[in-house]
Amino acid sequence: MQEALRFLSTPTSPFHLHNPQFPFISRSNHLHLPPKFSAVALPSLPKSPSLVISPENETSQASSSPPLQELLLYLDSLGVDSLYCLHSHPPLISAPLFQVKCTVDFLFSLGLTVQDLRRIFAMCPDLLTSPTSMIIIPAATFLLREAHVDAVNLRHVIHRRPRLLTRSVDRQLRPTLYFLQGTIGIENVANCAFLLSCCVESKFIPRIEYLQKLGFSYMDTVVMFRRFPRLFCYSIKENLKPKFDYFVVEMGRELKELVAFPQYFSFSFDNRIKPRHKMCVEKQVCLSLAMMLKSSEGRFRDQLEVYCGSSIPLIPLFGIMFERSLERVDASLG
Image 1 (cartoon, rainbow, N blue to C red):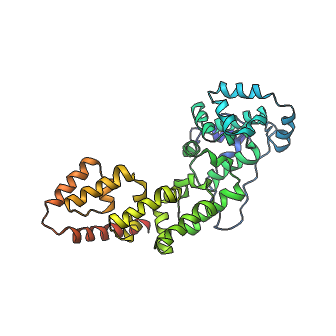
Image 2: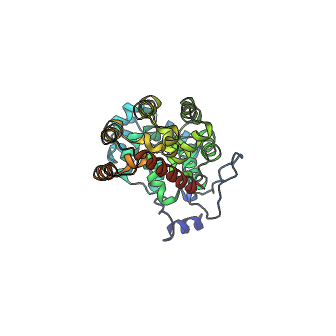
Image 3: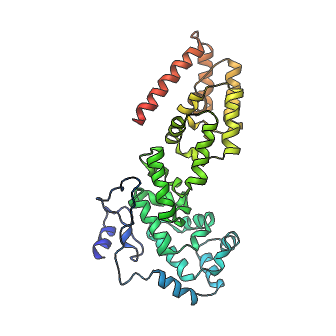
């Protein structure tokens, strides 16, 4: 216990512990990600006389918890919109104040600020009613020890996707991690840790199947998600379908271009894809998707003028550029 506290208080510690009740979330340098698809249990947590959070304590405190008014006043003192949280998440009405305070103290120990709490509780009021010792602490420990999220980046990860701390490690976080690593082949899941809160069956599989229905092979589909994991987050109806239809019907391009540049789906259809394609058509210039969409407005117009005044046939030129860009992407993926 004392060694853990000394480690977290040293200058080399990734973050400073504000509450000594949570010394075990520091990660050993010798911890490694377990073999894929093997049953792994979270490391046992050290016992501490001062550690008052336990399933039994949380249950016993519920009966003697202060009334709802005190809970709302406590949240208001943090600057949290308590009425909005209560309206968005009605179970908050029966949440023990003791449990909420334990959650707040633990989040402070991870380095989150009051401003962070205002944001994450508004985004995910479920966090206020999730058992601290049974759900929140194991989830944070999993992100550090198994997903290999750097401690200095943990605050950013939680700030972006607080729902991660409300997910069961065994039922959701760990299976999703193994799917991203084993099936998709993403080596550094920490770079897309926000995906760990998603459900494989309801979120990932439908999008993989949809791209296969569009004509992509299974391998090409997996490569697209490996190159651009955020693709898993896009709506099929509102994003993938309209942009793909325009890509095939209006732009008349080949599927292999999307395999090389799946980031195409991340650009605004009305503000970027459609107007820039029309400008290319007017100038009779065919640019690669990356060149057409990633450039700033000024650089894009300059490129149009350069290629428009070039005596080199544009379509063969584009083909050479595309093949070279594809080779560079494949080389970077190893």
